[in-house]
Amino acid sequence: MTDEEPKPQPRKGLGSQLSLKGRAMRLLSQREHSRQELERKLRPFEEEPGKLVAALDFLQAKDFINAQRVVDSVVNRRASKLGAARIKHELQAKGIEGPAIQEAMHGMRASELERAREVWRKKFGQPATDAKERVKQMRFLLTRGFASEAVRRVVQGEDD
Image 1 (tube, one colour):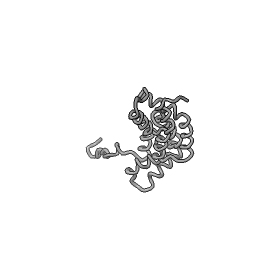
Image 2 (tube, helix red, strand yellow; image 1 turned 135 degrees about the vertical axis):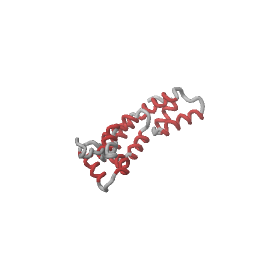
Image 3 (tube, rainbow, N blue to C red; image 1 turned 120 degrees about the vertical axis):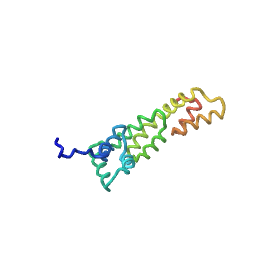
Image 4 (cartoon, rainbow, N blue to C red; image 1 turned 90 degrees about the vertical axis):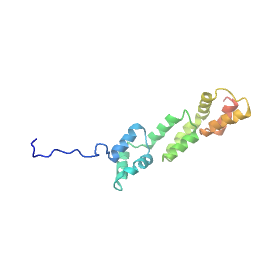
């Protein structure tokens, strides 16, 4: 380089600035996200109206955003600790609707009693000695979204 040529100046901030697609891909690399979640998280970074929708449409067309994978991911991560009602609520909060939730709930309700029993065993391990303790155990399982019939059977120690 000669003295007359100006030195190239580094562009400020571009190294840390990601496109909407790049940000979405970063989020999706960490875990599955629904379209609604991505839209909520990326909305503050949208500079031109319509760019976010276009980016999400592109990612959905390429199957990077997939509602069934979100359902499967949530069920696999949470089923060992939560009941069907609580997982259904989480999926609805993520913007998942319709048959995907119904199918997942059908499968979870079939194993509700066994999962409730396992959660109860890990937390308490022994039957309640008095009514106060029994209420505490029931409340614990109910707040985790297990069905009341399953909770009653677990706390009372009934077998199938």
